[in-house]
Length: 302
Image (cartoon, rainbow, N blue to C red):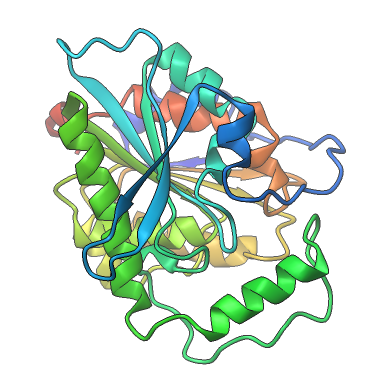
């Protein structure tokens, strides 16, 4: 674990020992899910939709509101961005996600990002991928073919549409519910981590804090400079075969050079997905981080 700035060392005591390590249990293959699976299984999560003005399409998003919600007071909001090829409610199904949000009083919203491979506005590769020859854990051949077809047929303005979907959903929730402007958070896993970097740089005035897990693509230095004032938690497994730990370490080194407030936690034996999706201890660190960081504290922490 690496922490930057004296204030972080004093305030983020929840992270414990400087040499943090965890060995994952055997959770088996990550089970693929169809859109709406979490909404159907957990009645605390609501499936919503709206019409995207730019295309006229109806797009889904998932919303969780704590059971004790009172419109007379302001509530913190977490916007969550899923990994590549995942459905809009995917993050809502991570072990402990709804339990922690209920416990700590966070509203959660997870947009689709227009398409499951949309990228949330982050830069995309210039060439399309062919259908995979081997399947990732938990993904069927039909699902892999469908994703390859989606990738081949993404519109030229996919970055714009994917970003627009996130910000539209954010505005819908902000207007519907009493959101605390000092406590609006953004986090993402894998592709969603790359989207978090992009949206943090594009809209740096919105977010109180950020969190990324196994993030990709890596941000450019000028992106980091645009949100250097925002505290960020970076989670990474050292056995990740999709987003190598070395790549994330390079990003964290840039954060250090820029004097950013960050906490970097590298998990021993951690893979790309299960180290957070099926590990409550890892996921809880995001809530602990967001619980102690808000905009009104920045004068004390920068």
